[in-house]
Image 1 (cartoon, each protein chain N blue to C red):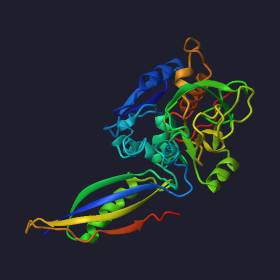
Image 2 (image 1 turned 45 degrees about the vertical axis):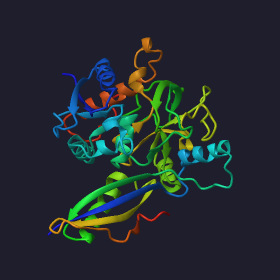
Image 3 (image 1 turned 30 degrees about the horizontal axis):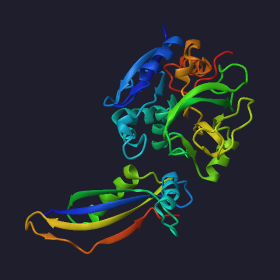
Image 4 (image 1 turned 90 degrees about the horizontal axis):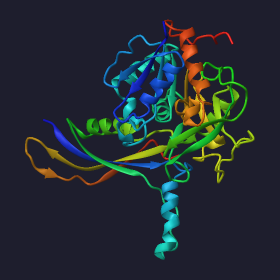
Length: 107
Length: 248
């Protein structure tokens, strides 16, 4: 029996890496009359579904593609977030509690 | 017989014709290498041209990295084959780990298309030995992600090993600054415009030598780099080993 796991991969520039988009967002905030916001980092979020025998196998697939394709380990770190799981035989949606694991640690 | 130079064509490549033209001018026989084909058609050197391979989705160059042709290009590199990446081609090589570092979004956030000046830092390489007298070379850039980045240790190692091939410079030849210096169009660290790998057979640069290969284009300062590549590939043709510099 395979289960379909829905994941989100969040990719952010590592600390210390120049993030001109984040800086541009920060620079625009005064024009909105917003103060006191700092540390803006702009990244990317990718959601995807993986069919696998269990969560560990699904997560391994996601971590591989996140590390090789969705992020560049020289400049970016990513986290993998499990959004939910659907069993293909009982076709019931059972959202598991959203859990986040840190990979490619951000420093 | 002219030396066969492969020019990789991805969906979104847009400097492949300029590059094949420049290769022809330099006396080579350009061979287009389609991204879905693993065959390198027996070429003696490979140029990865500029453009927006696979739309530059995710990050410039990364999807191209996993194409069938790039597996062959990586094997060619490991075997000592001569490879040059120009602009998007440089980004592809960096994503593939064939040259050190990464190309980030330009510090000024904008796509920049204009002429810049670069200095040849290493005049005795297969990529530069016919560049002519030492002087700033004028050639165009056209990119949104050209800010060269590597961690300080990698940068120091690159400098020490002669891995920095080109730097952005002012008209008088002095090296451009990193921040708020128009001579450094993208904010590249240490004003690095091009690098080569440790083995010395794979190089990449952001500026476009193929677009500065005829006087009618406004500059032919880039032609010496194209000639260097073609002549070097000819000198090592058929061996796939890094060729000795041709007789100067």
